[in-house]
Length: 188
Image (cartoon, rainbow, N blue to C red; front, side):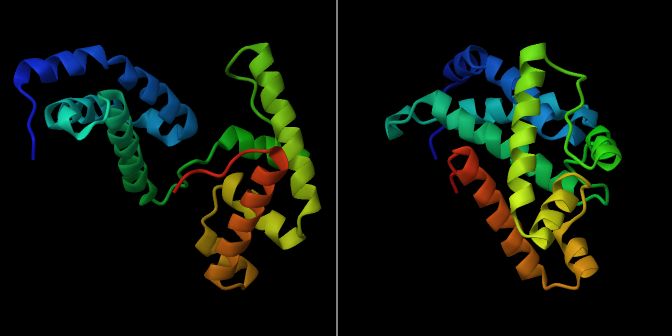
């Protein structure tokens, strides 16, 4: 394994330290449970430092690409560790209360500018319309998992369906929503 000399590693670390802030903001927005993790920044900084030490320019990749994947992996590892707790991971109580009160998905207007809130509302409206077109059980699976934070296994128990069937339906609805919205599927 190649090890970068110390001065080069320090230079790479300093020149790419803004990535830590970007990943910090993005991950806290995407995974609200990480907001309560005081060591998140230090985990990201450690991943950046390790990446700077392990980077091998002779492999033909840019450091920014190399470190991006390392930081993304760091976030996913933290998410996996936090998911083992009993509390649902991506649960947003404000969103759930709005859903239960109105019977629809409404975004809390606590963050962002007016244009951003308008875009979020439009997107939520589009998703709501798409969900209205899917089979009722599949729609229930998606809303129970995303809005209420219920695990797919507990949804399977509640609906008396095999876990594999619940997972298949969940994935099918997400694929349908992506297709209807013109969003490409995530890369494996």
